[in-house]
Length: 74
Image (cartoon, rainbow, N blue to C red; front, side):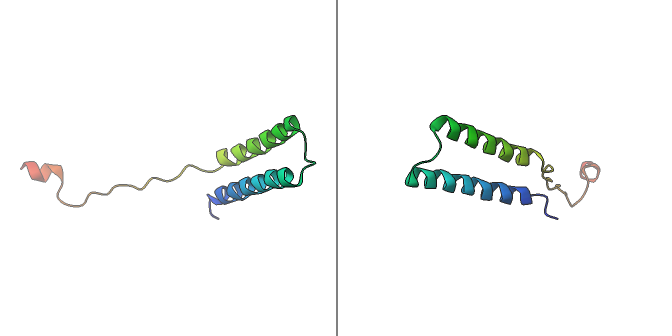
């Protein structure tokens, strides 16, 4: 399983949130500003929770090929 699949899910959720906000703005009758801020805050916290659950990224190891330092000195 891809350990970074959560990033794709977070991106999709962020796009959904933006789409909902834009639709409510266009069609009117949406929630009041404090209610909207509260709703967006809850969703952003859930996105932040997804970001903390992923494993750390692996760093590539640097392999040096060639003669060792001891051979260079001699």
